[in-house]
Length: 442
Image (cartoon, rainbow, N blue to C red):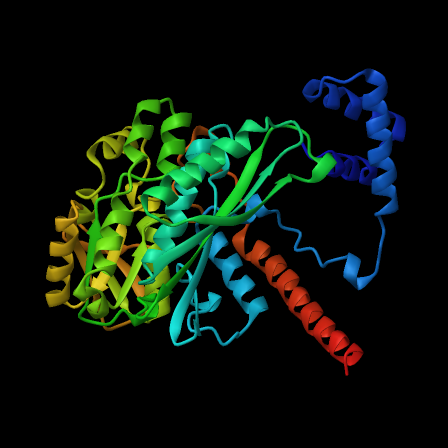
């Protein structure tokens, strides 16, 4: 619970301080084993701090609000709202001179240094794995290593960030770290640095855990999405899912299926490609994560400027059969959820070699489509007919709560206008501050 946010909302609505203190102290005691006197003093202190930081008008201390909440716009939910918000972030960052920048919506960023490509990527842990810290650390580490590998890079180090709310048990940071280093040690990629903090310091009470793991890699040849070309074939590996499928299994009451996600099949397959002669013939790679294949193919089509054709039946045949049965029983679209499969884009003759390398590493793979000239769009072949294949507003609803939340939505165009306004204001502020700092250091 964010006690600062609670007080700000209540003060803004005009509630009396005595009422806020009474209710907040009661909520504090629901979570913390403290006396009534301490809880009331805590509430008084929060109110004082909120008063001192309210109504500030300095440009440095205020921002132009979009009037749109993160959840309303689907930020983090790997759908159209999320993709739109990320493109706005890219606009604020602007052109940087990177070999692969954020504007390309790829799996990782790339710069050139010392005659080699340096790859950097970071992934946030799955938010619903807060009560399962080992799983959270394991799956987020797999994710960041995947993002490095699919850029054609050899991972050389990991870094970690973990935040636990004030009342969370210290064991969470240890179990989370054990999950990270389990993957790191098997793949021989060391965890070298990180940060450990409380979420919101004293202002967030409860036990919630969140964090991220990042990776740095090196490469001589990069396999960025922009390199996909007409005539290329799409090859996908079998996927049993990661953090998303583990979350689905846990919150729908299928805990045994979590074991299906505990594997390093993707990483072993990718590592074998990096060690082979075929790597330099591969045009592009990605992992099937961002809103499932719907999201990734949509982004690839836009970035490469080509038409991507996907055969639905071929994709479904590459979903782990136990996981597929669960998804079908729960009516969750396998093409709209993260499968943690690898997608390789290359000429037909190269694809045959890639498949041989993967099979040699014990990884099953099959062709699922092709790249054509034409409009930059994704197309799905279902029952022999072309159908629309675009990401939805949010990724497939894969928990009971998500199915409920997915039904509520404001008008997208109305929200987008607010998001545009806030992003434009942030860009203007950035430019003013750069100019101001430049004047100071002339």
